Structures are given as C-alpha cells and as structure tokens.
Amino acid sequence: MAECNHQSKHLGLPFCKPPTRSQAFNDITDKMASKLSLWKAKNLSKAGKLVLIKNVAQALPVYHMSTFLIAKKICRKLDMINLRFWWKGETTDQNSKFLALKSWKSICQPKSRGGLGFRKFFDFNKALIKGTSWIWQDAVKCAELIKLGACLPVTPLSTIRIWEEPWIPTIQNYIPSPLPGCNPNKPLLVCELINQGDLSWKMEILTQHFPSDIVREIRKIQIPASMESLKPYWAPSKSGKFSTKAAYRTIQQVSNPTDQVSDILGKRVWELDIHNRLRIFIWRMVFDVLPTKGKLNQFFPIYEPECPLCDLQEFITSWALTLELIWKARNDRIHGKETQAPEMIAKVVRKNATAYLNARNSRKMKTQTNCKWMPPPAGWIKINSDVAFNEDKAVAAFIVRNQDGFILLAESTEIFTYDASLAELRAIRIAVEKVNSADKDDAIFESDSAVAIKWITNPTEEPDREATFDIEEIRRIWEYRPNWKFRKIPRLCNGLAHGVSKWAHGANWDGPIPPPIFPNSVFCDESPIFLELLRCDL
Image (tube, rainbow, N blue to C red; front, top):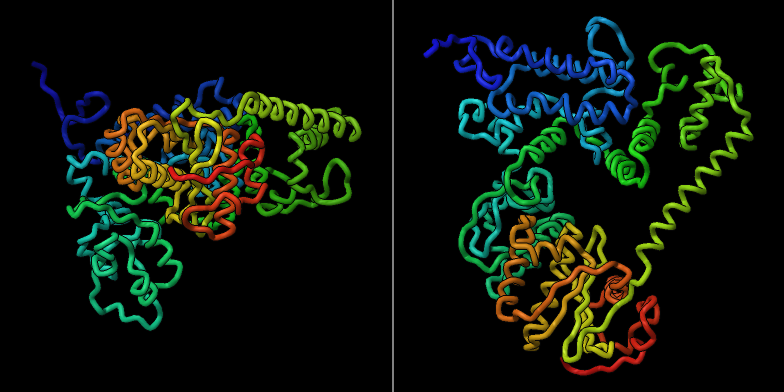
C-alpha cells in the first residue's frame, strides 16, 4: 500500500489536516478561473453570464465547502473571480482595472431582495457547514447561525418564558417586546396566554401585554391539540428544518438589511413574463446599474452629460424600458454606427409591444376555454372553498352545492395566518369538519390552490411546518370517508367561492351566510341557476 503524506488528497479533499487552509484549497481558485476564462464565455450576454456563474462557477466549491470551513482569504479570491467576470467578462488579468456599478454585496442578495442571487462564498460556506454537524469543530464556529433561526414551538402546556425565549416566528428575533407600561420582568409563560378548553388565545391578556401588531402575529400561531412537547424548529425555513438555502438567506438578511421598496421591486422584476435577457436588462435599469452618463458621472466627471440622441437633456434611465431599442440606438450613436430615425424606432417599439400583448392574450384565452363550474354526480355534494387574503387578515369561505347547482350552505370565517397557501388549506379543513359533522359520505372538495391540494393528497410531499396540523386533521377525517375526493381546479371555475370570500372579507361577515343577502356581484360568470337559491339543511 502506498504511503500518503499531508499533501495527499482524495476527491479534492486533503486526507490530513492541512498546515494552513489557504494552502490546501488554493487550487479551487485556479479551477474556477479556468472555467470562466474560456473564449466562448467572453461572448456571453449578462443573462448568459448569470447562468454560467450560478450553475458552474458557484457550484465548483460546494463539495469542499460542505466538509471544511475554508479560509476567508480563499473565499475572497473566489468572490473576486466571479465579480471580475460579471463586470469585465474575463478572469485572466487579475491586475487590470474595471468599473463595478453596483457592490458585490448587494448583487449577492436574493432576487426577492433586489439582488441577482449570487452567493458570497464565506457566508455560503458557513451555511453548508451547519448541514454537516458531524464536523463538530467547524460547526461550533458557526453556532451563532443556529441562534439566528432557532424558535420554540407553542403547545397548550408550553412553559416558554415569553420575554426571554424565541417563540413568535414572524417577528424579528422571535421574542416580543412588551406594551409600554408593562413590566417585562414579571415572569409569564405561554401556557398562561391560552384557553385550555377551546385552545384559543386569551385576547384580554394579549392586549394587556403586547402592542397590536404583536397581538396580530401571535394570533397567527396555531395551537395544536397535542399536549406533547415538540422539538425546536428552524423558523427561516417553511418546513421548520434547517436548510442551507434558508441559512444563507438568514445570514444575508442580518448582515445586509434592505429596504421594503427594494424587496418589492426585486420580486416584481423576476415575476415578469418576459425573456430572461430582458429581465436582466430591466433589473439593471430599476436598480440604476446601466452605464449612462449620469451614472458614470458619480465615479468620474462627465463634461457632456446630455443624451447623445437628442442633445437636450440628461439620458433618463426609464427610456431604456422600450425593449432596449432606445438604449441600442444610443449606443450606436456613441460608437459612431448608423442610427435609425426616431420615427422608425417608435414604429418598431409599437410593433414589438403589440406582438407581446397579443401573445399574452392568446395564452390567457387558451386557459379560459371550457372552464366553468361542473355539478357533482347525482346524490353527491360539491364544496368549493377560497380565501380573501391581505396583510391584516384572511377570510375563508366555502359553498356547498348539490347536483342541481343549488346552494345548500354558505359560510365564512376569519382565520389568522401569514401565508396564502396556509390560508387556503385552513379553508379546506374548516369545510371538511363541517361536512363531516353533517355525516356526508359522498363529497367532492375543490380548491384553486395547487399547493394545498398537493399537501392533502400526496403523502410524500413535505409541507410547511405550520400546515402539519391542518393536513393531519383532514387526513384523519378522510380515513373514515374514503369516498371523498379532493381536486385542484382553475381559479375561473371557482368564481362563486372567490366572490363570497371577497364579499365576506369586505363585510366583516363571520358564520353561516343566508343566501338572500348575497349581492349579485359574487356570482361572477356563474350560471343564472345559482340565483334561484334554495335554502335547506346539509
């Protein structure tokens, strides 16, 4: 058997603990630079560079980083290679200068927070290390990361100290602040805030101790019927389990907080139904990353800041929204190329805009064809549910109809949750409990939430932690009603439930709804038969 020394490696990892971590992993930087220095990579657009960096360059050191905590010096070199390639398109000349119009820290924010979703390697390394807790020495170095997301679950007998321990997953630090004038030194446990009879929150005590916004967040916490103590969970992850992705996002949120406007703009840019190349261009425009004269003037003096097309005023970045045509014409003018007349540019802009709108409308028409509510088979009932949801509250409503389309029952109730899918699931559970209490074996439950239906019908699907109680309750009842069916339907086929939930939300209605008080607006495009309401018992 051959003898190995301290420099021997297996699958790129050292057999023995290296003298210095910089020495052991120096070859990663060379591999990454060579991957990005190929001649084809130099000709990529910004969208192409985005794909190459995220899927190739930033995937290279994942195996190493999930095993060892790599030196900061190496991580900074890796960041610089990616930074140089993004802005300059090459990695060979490490000493050449280039202009970065936006900081790498902000570009490495998630897309939902105004960045491009690139990874800062040292932060990503810490997130990966926590997923391999058997490497205890490196994991201990990242122990603070666990504290950033650990939260205690609420049960009817919780002995959580409300002023000292984390237990509210939707507020900062998960520990509430008291109402002015309230003494936080007075010991108070979570179980003292719960009505043990109906497992509801004691509103009188909540309003005495917490501000109104904290009370609203507490009411979103669902109290399980189980009296058993549950394990702590990782609040930044929807599943409640620690994940590298959630850990990295947590690090970025703590170290680089962004304003709400950037978060909203970031989400909307990446939700646009357009080509990825145009998304990148609009992102550059929205976050002021286009190399206009006004932007360049922030770094060095520009003596002629006027627009090169009209020579009248400074170039306005929003002009670039016109499908890049004005931007392209501006670049052609600067670099001495032939420029189209403004009238021709405007004509092409209108043509492209019309083509895009026609394409979107044709897709919408395809989804709307043959979409209407269908009655259940004879002897069956069909239950449609929906939720009217905003930041302050959610109202769930369900409609029960027979094979003739007559409404047998309509009901709404206010629910407290912070997620649309959870609200839809809660609406289905409320309908399930009502139909089960009426002893109906032949029933079809329909919802326009694909996520909620998948959680119920697919046992292998991992749900959000907050959804577990609702799912278990629905499945428990379903076992005794094997004929029941759960279906996902298009939103357009769920018009009546949507209209009723929206009306109940605006009217603050809670409980059974007498059909005669329905306004005509809730019926949308449903058949006129629904106007001949027949009130009867389930």
